[in-house]
Length: 278
Image (cartoon, rainbow, N blue to C red; front, top):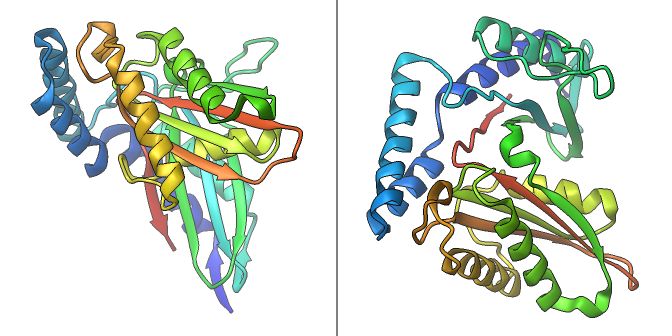
């Protein structure tokens, strides 16, 4: 049995929040570079150059990649052999508060009715999963609303089948236009229930950009949706070209025989995510 102090968790989340705002991970940087190199549209290629320059300046100057520093989304994998000293949720929320304060990050969380800002960018949204072992994994995904607002969930009839899933995802992405700041990553949750599909779509964004699903038929579905999105030519920030999306990640879960839940969670080009294992 290992013991982890909640103070250690608080410090880790604080550091993750600051680092996520400033430093894009290698997977998204490599995807943007590859997109720039293969892009045929002059305007799109120029914008990709600007996005890469912006990411470099943000990292060197320690300023946010985007002014929308997002809602804090935290995924926790808590080992069953860990004893926590202190309150886990309190440590997570305090870590977010400190990270946004010490990092001088924009605080964007407010009451949904009064629209009064909480002033701390909390509460963060926390998803907790118990796993075997004695490790605590923390994944921090700050989610800006230009992309989040373009997400959706629909309960399709089973008769819609694969074609219905593909059509709905493509229709939703094209309707989003330039709002989610493409090139985007498209997370798709397929199956489960109303709330499970949405969680799957969000978790799909945690997969390294372009890493295919291990199930062959799901990987083929990802490839098909990505190809059909890009062939429409909306392109980088809506200025045309061959790169509307960098990747499509699909996660699936068994569902009821009478339903076909499909959730789409879109992520912008500034795909910020950080992880630490305690």
